[in-house]
Length: 256
Image (tube, rainbow, N blue to C red; front, side):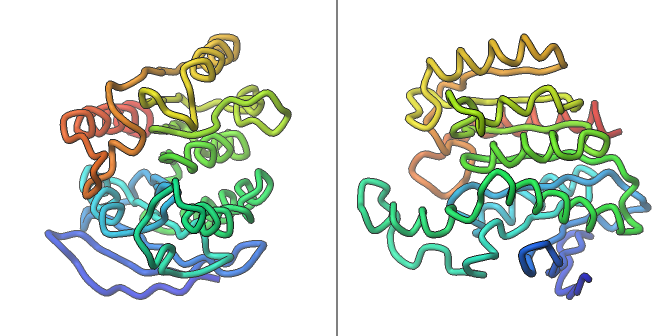
């Protein structure tokens, strides 16, 4: 069951607010699509761990302008439709960490996979989608991008993660364990000195990618965790544009 509310168009861009029925409730989300003859490839565009905000609307809209139907879901729909944080963010502050745990706690590996299947089913039912799909995640949702590719290997042709946290861990729930189930072409952009994905974890992750044997690219950008997202102190325009060019190339090569 999907409810759609078309509420605007910017430069021949359709923007829809939608509700998607999942196994765990109703997920609110946004769809961006160019006013072009379809059907078109689709991209599942996960926001980072801070949640949907103006920067991610603009990022999703920009990618849609390349000729994709882009779905931007509220990954925290189980807890709230927003605001996600109604106070200044400071991850050194226990208040921020507690709120982040409240929001992200329900996103277990199984929940991520259930949500991914619901989002992809929604996209697959749209007449403006041709069935060729990709996914991208940032920060926390780098894991979600990998799990999406693993749970839907015959749908997801390309997957990317930028400054993804926790992509490699020494336990059975680590995202890298799902690599044998993935058929997609993969792209990873890591951050320097990232506590959520330190250099040792990156090295082990890249070793796992080589053992997997699929097509992938993985590199560490000379930038801090969160560099891709406009509006924050961490934003690095030069490296953000580099990330966008890589992402655009991945989807152009894989989904067209």
